[in-house]
Image (cartoon, rainbow, N blue to C red; front, side):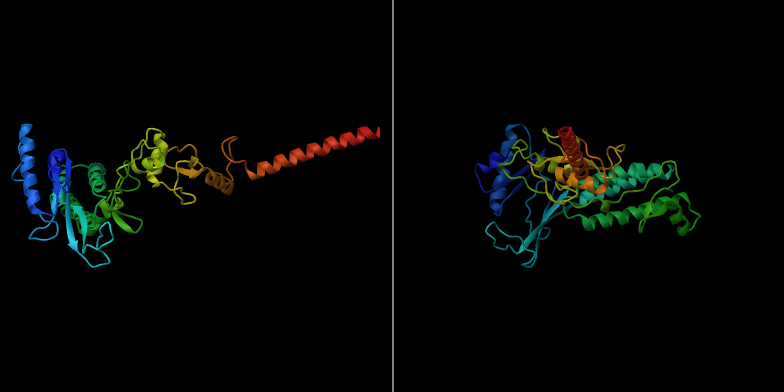
Length: 342
């Protein structure tokens, strides 16, 4: 698909995913010609272009600038020189590009939350939380790479209003403070839609803002998961064919940094998995990846025992062995003196 356009217009940028496609160019005539080329290419394989969904938009100017692609709204905004984007040579553009969640995506997400609450009117609170959490968590993770902080706060506010209506519908004759006390409990410094801590299936509703914003980092054209930089790819993807799944997931969670010294890992470093609280029975919740020397320092600091042959010898163990060797030498010399006297 992209070759049908870039062969004629090399400066055009074609982004395609499944049956969605975007062509980027600064000249409108090039975009109109690209649309005709795309129609011809689709006709060769027996397909047609969806005319109602096909638009030519300007990302900076016009009545409705920007466009939506894969649930995101992409648009450029006029800004000052301190926030302006730059060309490869360093020249300021006078605008910046922001990618936000699309309006249709937000409305569809709110509609899905409303459907879950409507069909859960008679269900207990724990079951409602169990059904809402995957939907909220999945949407927040999908949009965490874009400018979604304000949208997440608005979605949390609208979700709270929907839950308040859900709770009032279950208790129409009670007051609002009673309903709040029944279904909202304090976790830290804020009220959270949660069950009682003594309930059989205790849980709380996750919010959109709990998922941190993670900026997407581009992959260079000459990089590959098989180029030997297993630390970088494990940190990025959480998996690598040459690394154990547990270590790869820890590298992704820690963003490639050692939790003890805070420095980045390198492919030639010795990386070890440590139990952060010393409890080896809990094999998942308290694991962390450390440099080998950081693991030794942490072990000496907290007084844990070091296995033989795995890391540097403990200072106390070395001193004890040194004292033992010194004592054996002194005993042997004493025996030699006694023998010479005889």
